[in-house]
Image (cartoon, rainbow, N blue to C red; front, side):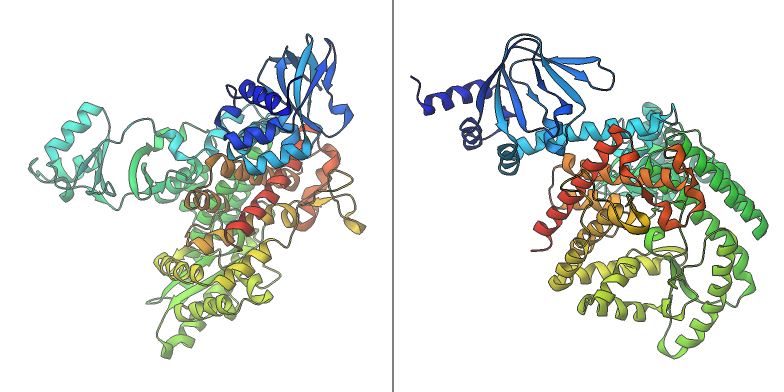
Length: 635
């Protein structure tokens, strides 16, 4: 009779050639081999059936073949053979799954109990990575299903959500600043491009030279072609990190009039993406709306443009646009609308000679505005202490008119008073630094509440360099204060994902019985965690998705784990957007007539099976994110 040790060794020899076991350590394989049991299933046996409830075992086929059937359609999707596992996705998500597994011949399987499966995930990074990759496919499948419910354009919108690095198809055509114009033109001709990037010795972009520059600065100026490219290039080119999305690049181009964007990694050039590349991805009229905003001569015209933005938003939601590009689109258009409004309102006030900046805070500051949003803003100004009150008074007069005008355009006044017209939020550089320093030094609950709003600031109008300098100063302060970080983490852990112990979800009682608030119980978890990561690591970006991606890079977290968390956040955002525009189930289309807080609510049990399954996985990812935050920042 074979001893347990020989049986375990035989099991390891069988598992070793197959993924993910081929990447696992000897000790983890021993842990697995000591706990699996060999089970026999005659031909025709249903091995795993979602009707039986939550999956309880992982199976590894040792001999025979197993058919995988979709329980909704009954169609056979694939056949799995020796060395393949199932139902990993259901086990990782803690659900019954959506597929039935049937023996097409006599089958022997190694079975691993759920408790041991979870232990193996914790101890073996390759196995955990394998489970994460399986869950990623669920995320993509569910997001695709959401989009297909409304549109045939799901592939286009998913592309807009992808990072710019996926759009870089070739090495960037480049030269250094000392290159003669003739030599640069030769490179452009050989590579058949209309522009050339100019970089320094570290491959950091310092300029760009285009055919327009050739006409304006060389041909018409009669310049010698031996002149260095530095004399005729356009300095300070548009740059975005490779993790930025195509939609962010579209927004930047539409707002600033750029025709190409330098794609960088850690500040170094990795590619160039053109206007044509980006606008080929979509056919929405965002650029036309921006043009109409720029040409507006009065508030009434801007009000019509705001109506156009609402119509575009409705269309994009109805067409299944992805959450991240959609919220970026809404924010970019609202930014353009606000900037034009300020340009119309400002001449009526005494702002000459003032050095100031209008700050967007909260969701506006994070570039994550949804359709149910009010005003969140402030003012930052530079001034000596003697003239501070006079400057404040002049800016408050403007802010009062600006806030009222924004309300006329459809941005409700903030009930909490988080607006620039409030003297408490119209502060000098020194006052903002003093306030931020106090919140960091004495992180009371009230201070943390304020930090959640005001630390997500970004400059929108005026001298935005003031906001950039304030951000740089803040990034130098927060990483040094461990108490502030720990309390910020504790604050981010206050909300638990609404996962139930008896039923799948823990819904609310009373007036909101049977529902979940997707904002306060869902997206807030990701937003708070991303902010805590960013402030602890000195990351300047305010957008939640980018904060998570950059934090993952900084902490050397596997990109697939980060992508799963970001996709879960996008899924919740998409459900919010659909709920707010009344695009959920027909009986819930009264959403537009409800207050914003109610418009974020859904009945999770009214979702279809796939959406409900993904909702649970999104909340599990929220829990994983909180655990990661506690382990890395909260210790």
